[in-house]
Length: 501
Ligand code: F6P
Image 1 (tube, rainbow, N blue to C red):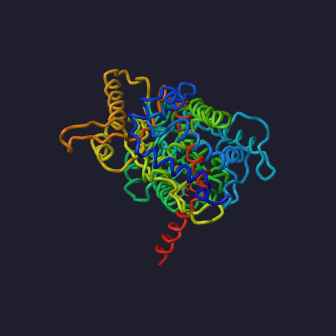
Image 2: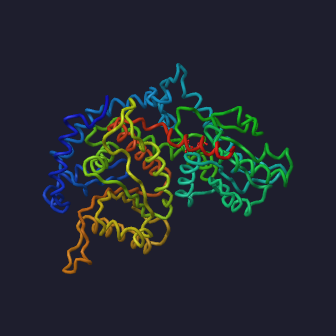
Image 3: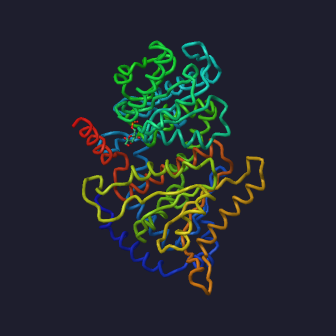
């Protein structure tokens, strides 16, 4: 397939970008109402408004869609869903979508149907989370569990941490804490607040070789054993991993282990048993609703025509700026305190997936790949870096994520929050002319606006699947393998060497 930059369509996009750079968003938006309709899409109440971008239907969209076709986005999508080994450098299938699928036809990886294994693990998760939440699972001294500590890092932390935080108002189970950093201040800070008799540790590590996680898990075990003795481990530790032997040698019995598979990438793993702490917090029905929301976005991604396909358009319009306007960053701005960890979660999803400089075939790329992702929740970010968005010279596409309805019983707060979000979007679009240059807002800055009807598990699942597919489509257009992360592996090995020296 090679580098897309050698294609005629790539050069056409470059030429078109040069034309569009001379145009202002306000002018582009004013001339054409059908354009706004074509760029505003919805799915079960979830709305995506891409109209505030430097895009015309006749040219920009058709060129980008032609690029997507040339790069065989639909074929690669179908190959992913079918379980083909599209993670070519590691020889692995990429099947996080199977974890939320309702399909029943066999889905084969190496000749084996993965669906029964998924169903069995989900039943085990359901049983276990019910037992803990109902107080049937007791600690070594017979007490019910009040606190869960999820020990993991990267995808074994960021996804579950984000979802548990986002759905915190729906938590009906034990309190869930997260420990990721190998800095002892992290685990000490959590352990200090806990009673070993009522604490359950969930050690999440796909490989069960990640040094930070294993050290934190060992420290937690030492703490537990010092209070309750060796035999207490069986009632206070469970593991989520692909590595049965390592889990056993850590001292966790197979009964207390939840299986993962090498066809689920770490940063795509919250849908698997890596999401156990989510089920413990909000219950199995809530976790299922999260999966169902993601499945609805999956179906849409698989079936909607490309020009009406939310993940495809989102990916292409964001790529439009990165590849053809030379932008370096994207801002993620959730107007919701509960979505505060979304930028961190998306940093891994996006930057670990598409922070690459060679094509699938190993050829050096001569174009920009994944951008810097940063962000903060509104309206907090307005009082820090938004100044740079408004008056800095860089163009930074900004993604606004809002919640349509107030669910906090404080309509006056919701009204102010929503007004601020709308104001920022409008200020970025239109700018403000003032006789004093220092008071002039440049405007002409593109924004993407995603609106969730409510902050529940179903729309949250849709949002996360949308971002997964956005990253996927961009990786396909750039001809990257979005599913390995060898850059990170090198650092891990170096740290090992340094420790041993
Ligand atoms: O940071 C690299 C990485 O491999 C991530 O992709 C992964 O999510 C994280 O480490 C944790 O890995 P594990 O779940 O195997 O402990």
